[in-house]
Amino acid sequence: MGDQFSQLRGRPAFRILTRVLFLLVVLVLGWQLLSLWGGYRFGSIGTKDFVAYWGAGRLLWSGENPYDFGKLRQFEAELGVPPESQTAVWNPPWLLVWISPLLPLPFGAAGVTWLVLSGVIILVSASVVWRTLAGPSSPNRALPVAWVAAFAFFPTLSTLGMGQVSSLLLLGVAGFFYSACRRRDYLAGAFLALATIKPHVLYLFCIAVLWWVVAERRWRVVAGFCAMLLPTLAILTLLSPGWLTAYRTAMADPPLYWITPTVGGMLRLWVFPDAPRVQFLPPLVAGLALLGFLLMKRPSFDWRAAAGPLLLASVPTAAYGWSFDQVVLLVPYLEIIRWVADGRIKGARERALVIGALVTLTVAMVGQGLLVQSEHFFFWPPLALAAVYVYAWFCRQPVPEMRLGEKRI
Image (cartoon, rainbow, N blue to C red; front, side, top):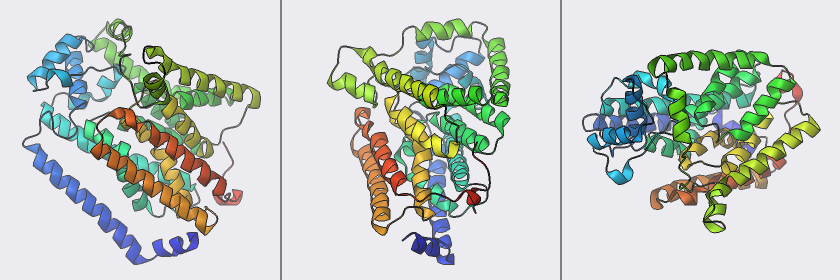
């Protein structure tokens, strides 16, 4: 089946079909965006969370406290946000500096621009991940497959639909993944700085990166990280000298009432409803387990092999995380598809099972997103994807070292 797929995708008709499908998706999205432009306001696609980022950014650039939730709610009320939908920003304040080019725009124009930009970021990230998974000496084939898969992945749709910044989180992971696999350590560190907007989602990934940097003395990663973050902090300090105090005050009273679709969230919902801090138990256990493994085994990292499992373990066990944060799982999702596309899954039955499982998972996620509004029920997709990944991993054929053309790093 793998050879048949390789022959199929090599035919001109297959290439034309995938490009036509992708072009059709782009045209439909473009038509939708054009129709939105004139009447884009809160309630339109991509506005539910973006309104809080835009309002907090406006407060910051006017010299006020972006974590003044009273003023932020005033902003949101003026834009027509009903009280029950008003929200706050809990991300670190340097995020607001990074999205500052959007802030001078009116809310409608800023929202549409972010929706388009976020889609482009996800598209570029998927392309980068797909190319990195291929290895430097492998042709960059079937790239439209990665594009279609990326936009069929429900967390992508959730990210775009909510106007979330999780696309930047994906870009940080994809950029680090690409750069680390090519020993471009300075660039890897710069991309890693983007992970600081939601470090709790990637906590195991970040622990592994820190271990890798120290154990292998990859200090240029630290230099790149600082080169990205320190100028941002300088701008932030000029705009709001008291930003650190404001952020610490806000984080002293975090929204522990949120029950998110994670293992800890379900543990709290079903077993310990009166103990909100139980959500921190899974990341504590998983973090200590990873540290113990690193200290005992002292592994050398091949990021092509390590990134997927780390993300699959980190996202569902995070203390907090929503369906849109699961967009970073596009990395292992595309990795499985790449194994199938490259004919690396041995056995026709095994390939059929992997493909069937991926299709079922994709359809089930989209169906649930359309039919079920509660976020609680999105705890299962990362666990299901992890099960498919493990099965596919055991069924895959190893790539000869000569094909990769480079040593492990």
